Image (cartoon, rainbow, N blue to C red; front, side, top):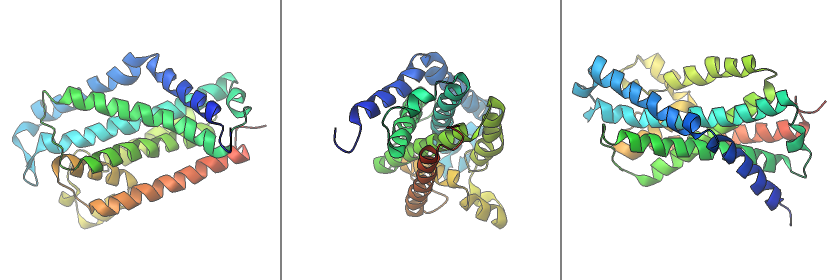
Length: 256
């Protein structure tokens, strides 16, 4: 129908969403337990309940970062596992054969990851409320950075899934790219306490901007420029989108 395969695109998106809804205890509920364990460790064992960062109680400072991490990790897991399983089982052809453009393939698959990431973020936020007061300083920043963070990691998961030839490869992407960038992005600390060289390195990390932007939307505190974060997130996602569409269009590691 017209220039876009709307029926096929909607079907592809529904397939990606139903994949994670079928195992919701693993994909939606398990991240809640992990996040609450982080809160418990910082509040009880490390004295987070008595500390503050920039005049903000530490637990309120920490909570937005944990929410973004849950969003990002689950968005990445959704797209990377979808493509890897399809490649290993040999049914990736069922995705490539229909009349999809490269942009439609990218959109359908990554939006499934975005949906899972945002859904996990909402569930985690609701679970946190009894333990940490969550505010809304700027709803626009919260929505923007939640969606853009999920999109960034969905695109990374898509790229990683296409590039990888076995699960060991996608595990390497997680261990050597996603996890280090997440933990070095200011999730558990303010980068203002770091040496100057480390602060510069943190500002080169795109994960910093997704965490800092959502934190600003929740508590009104930001270690960097909130406006710059909007631009960086848009630019990084545009570059990742272009790479994804090139991979699908060229058949990179997808077509014999």
